Every structure is written in structure tokens, then in C-alpha cells.
Image 1 (cartoon, helix red, strand yellow):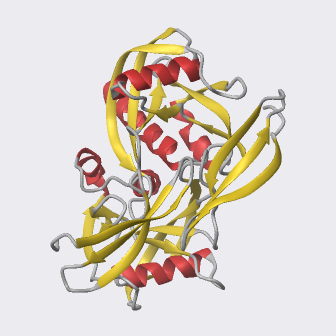
Image 2: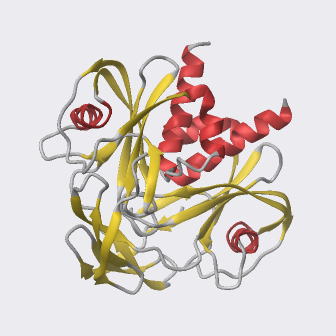
Image 3: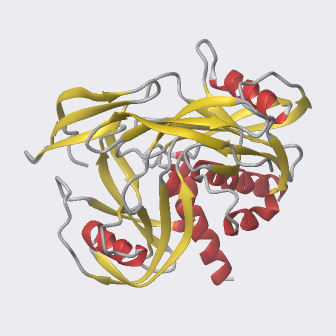
Length: 183
Length: 183
């Protein structure tokens, strides 16, 4: 692996309420220089949760997505709030979005979205031993909760209701985990 | 599923060489109003390719990622250029990045990155029947090509060299596909 490039300068070039874009002035170990743009990641990170109602059934949600202008089927997710750890954030999000808390939550993997131009990471978590519990969220309308059997993951992949890469990856990981547990 | 929200207005609020941020003024079917920010997706989309050297071995690349400021192990990827279809773009990218073309390329799935606030989609493709072929890319330094056995996907998940959700999802999909083919 080459030595890491030297970052000579970073410079804010655009900014809005939610997003910050900066230029990164890089010099690679072979002397090549490049100026790349990237989205700066602020805040405390994000969580995306696989809430398992039982050993076979995951609770998906159907939610309007402003980026793609359509209702997307996917997993509950949200930002980590100040003072929360990942597990507290995950538990709050599933209470807000699927009406359950969880006695057991474990980290599956911390994934990047588009590491070439985004600093963002999402923590994928598995939530088990659910119990009914709600917390008010900030959603503009009630979310539809859609129970889905993990052995129907192929249908989710083949269809076009669920397109989010992070959600699909987390479902593959949990399906593998439960296949090993049930063996 | 509720009726789609009405988009009353979209407005550009920040802009750089690569990124555009716009505000979306939404009215949900229950009357609730929200103003969300989103990244606009320009261009012709992106491809991410799983180049299979044989029925067991995928060619990964190690590349510097400016967003996360580290070398990431992942799949070859890039933007679709004007005039290209997805398959031409995929074939060009693997020639540039892993030194092979492919006789067979198929679309696995079109995935979104973060549909809540990004319009971006990535087309995941499987490339088979590889042949040696190169094309000059625009990389600042040569990429390291790393052959990886699909039956070692668990190690990739457990380690921290490969964090990109899209790459990991594509590898799960191809592992499933080859498991069915080899059965």
C-alpha cells in the first residue's frame, strides 16, 4: 500500500443548512497532485437497524424519500443525537419508527457510503428480543411498518420497492448470521 | 401507501464544481409541510462492477478515498460517460482499474445510496469471462489489484479494509448467485 497522500490544504467551497462541501488539495506519494471535492461529515454518525421480530421476520418501514422522490421500503435509521451511544440511538430510532424497543442490540459493521467523496459512515446494528414501545419521532406522517421474512430477501432484491444499498447489505448480513445460528 | 407529497418548490441553495444542494418544499397528503435539503444527482449515473476472474475469485482494488482519508479495498467503479450505456461504462472501468475486459456483463441491481437526501443511484454489475485489456484511466497513481476468494467474504466483513456498503452488497449478491449456479 503506498504512503498516504499529503493533504496540503482543505477549503470550504459550498455550504448549506445540512451540507458542507470542501476542496482537498492532495499530493500523492508519487508526486502527483490533485484537487478533489468531498462532502464533510458532521455530527455523531448514523445508525441503521435490523429489528428482528422473531428469528425469521424483520420489520421494514415504508417512508417517503425526498432524494429519490418516492416511497422506499427499507430499514429504520437516523442520526445519533448528542449524548447518545450507538445502542441508545438505535433503540430510540426503532421505538420512533417501528414501535418497538430491543433488549439486545449488537453492532454488525460500520460502513461508508461513497468513501471517494463522502466522509459519512453508517453503523449497521441488529436488534433482537423486541418489546412494544413507542417514542414520538419527527416524521411528517406515520410510517408504514412492513414485516418481511428473511427467506424472502431474494424478492426484495428482485423487486424495486427497496433500493437502498445499506439496507440490503444489512439484511444479507443478518440472514447469514441467523442461518449460522439455526444450523 | 399514501399519495406522494406535492412538491411546491425546489430551490438551489448551494453549489460547487461537483455538488448541488437544493431545498425541496413538500406538502404531505395529510397536510404536513416540510422543507428538506437534498443533493441533486447530475450526469448519467454510476457503475460498480464485480469482475470475476473465475467462479471463485473477484478482483478488488485498493484505492485512496478522499472522503475517508484512507486506502479502501473495494470494487472498481466510476461514472457513466456521455454516449455510453451501462455495459460499455462497466467494461471501460474494469479495463482502466483492473486490467481486464469482460465478454459477459449483467446488471445485478440499481441501488440508491441515501435516498432520503441524495438522488444518486449506482448500477451494480457482474462481469464474467474476463480477458486482459487495459485502458488509461485518470487515477493519480496505479491502483493495486487484489484477488479475493468469494468464500472469504466473511473475512472482508470482519476486517476494516473494505467498508463501502455498495461493494459489500454486490459481493453478497454475487456469492449467492454463484452458490446457486454451482449447486
